[in-house]
Length: 118
Image (cartoon, rainbow, N blue to C red; front, side):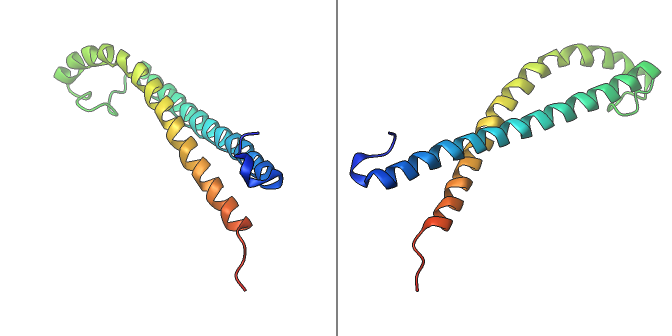
């Protein structure tokens, strides 16, 4: 049992159930949000690669000028570090979403189960 033994078995079982279900909900919600964000990133990447293959550099700052195109070649190779940052920020974002969803579920549970005043 996860709860303290002095609470009684009914209350301890209720708290254990709360912890399990809020954790499952928070993990699922966090995973779905991060997955959705990753899919949006991949869609945007695909669209931008199509523009680059067609020779359209207008969506890149400075990409429309000749000097901008020379600099663009170096900028595109320097962005290889972006993937590492994207993975790191997604990992941190997963935990932030998880903590917020967990706290929200506990507050909802408390609101529904607290004794009502007459």
